[in-house]
Length: 292
Image 1 (tube, one colour):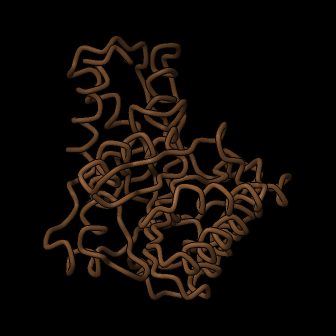
Image 2 (cartoon, rainbow, N blue to C red; image 1 turned 180 degrees about the vertical axis):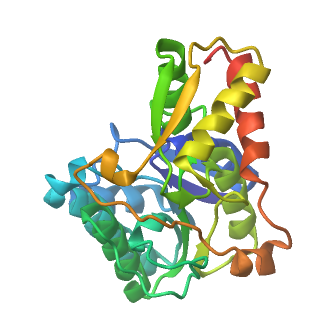
């Protein structure tokens, strides 16, 4: 049985990876409480003590707006920690899987981003995530970088779906940005894909999101429609589309976040599930768990 180290095991994707990676071998986990990614010496000591054959890094500094004022901390976690992990993996002969983001692109394209397209991040979060990617690429270790986007799930404390359902129970009208386009992606599907890619020993950079496209407005409308179909009680009567300019934030966000699946499909043999189908499954599960 292979030894797998899962870093960031309490996050949205991390909690799903606990289950999907169990098919690969013995999964050892760390969380923010047991491994401080801003302290390089603890990373090296932990990895060497556990001596995994596979390292899966699902941890990140993900507070996109807060990163603008906490650039050093974001860089330590998103840029420097992956460098340390990659260098340690290289030394130990381990295989490193690292989660990255659509935010490495500026969103100025009008066609889906290929893994080979040149990154151009708009803000600190994207810049630090790209720094982590580059460090891994330059380390010489065996690696898989999986970029994803618009992640949600039943695990974790907060995401767009949970926020919309909370607001939908409190308000009759909700205003949602309609000029940012992406692919809502269920954390369960990401975790399942990672397990498949690891079994195939995929290397390099891949893109994974659910299939299909939507604006945040489209996504919100779908969330409320699917929730109402399940009988989840809501007060919301109107969802009003607004522009990015109507909802200013500290960090700029890519207006177009569609990631191309072609390279992924070539190795996995099929397209990811459509985002609306995965949303239905997530809400059904959340309702059965008593979350909604």
